[in-house]
Image (cartoon, rainbow, N blue to C red):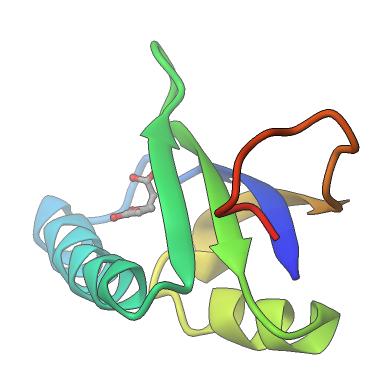
Length: 96
Ligand SMILES: O=C(O)C[C@H]1C=CC(=O)O1
């Protein structure tokens, strides 16, 4: 199943820069692993915001939840999830 996921990161203003850098580095490592595995299909920065729009490809809602919970920044993100289904007019072969 495909999901449109919007993540907004809200790091506490008083978080030590070293802790923030460590969280971001671990997040990047996990995000890149999920992309290599084909789970995190698209990752786009929303211009001007510490937020992204992503497409995840997972088996079901629970799998998406479990995946998102593995992200080191999860406790600091507001996440909006929209389940997707194929559009009847789409000519793409890779969005099933
Ligand atoms: O930067 C973000 O949007 C948050 C998160 C998503 C991927 C990643 O490396 O960090």
